[in-house]
Length: 308
Image 1 (cartoon, rainbow, N blue to C red):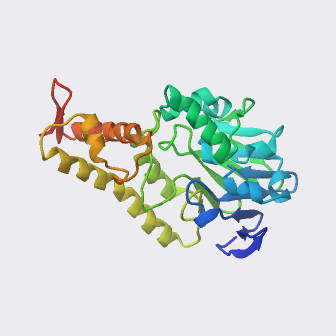
Image 2: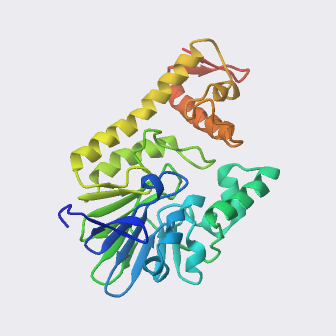
């Protein structure tokens, strides 16, 4: 493939072609709530990777696909599944329960009480959300032979437990999903996310055998390895920036996780969605665990954290 990209538009959606792979770019280069759609054509079958909102505008190139491989399970990656009813949907074994069941997905997001029902209604309206009760589990290293083209899953957890990169072989393209290299930085705010795993994933992603890297959100396509590595370093640096923010807040005195969550290490103060406090608290708790392991923070008997 040699990193050569041909770009054109179809149905007013910008697209880029890399041999048997087409990337359809979502709104604002796939910025949430949208995403970028990858379609891979073999001589025997066609696979789509995830299904963003923009998939609904692609037409037969998307709806005629034979299977869908989810790199991970979140609502914005399931927005076109309703157009693929009856076709195989695959998800990593650590995420597949969330694909099959709304109740499991709601647990992943930490939704409780009325928020559960409100969120499902919102997802159905904004993301055409449906459950995929027959989703098929796959493991790290799973392959799909499309006919002259092979897709291989490489487990890259942290964002979700089952988050995977999907490699198109022998064409050297890696779909890296929500390792999106955004200025926001890594997201690990679900009830089953892992800061530790995300750190390890960002070390491993450098070694993927790729010449082209495709993100689901924000950046879209990289064909220059150095630019990819530079943006990856900046993305990874958000971990340290969040540590520094926490240490700064604790410099004012001991605080609970709830108090620290009000100070925010992820979202700006003007973001007032009901789920933000939970995401902040879960993310902060992971950072505090790391900082305690480094001997920089201690937890007192009253549940407050302080600098050492």
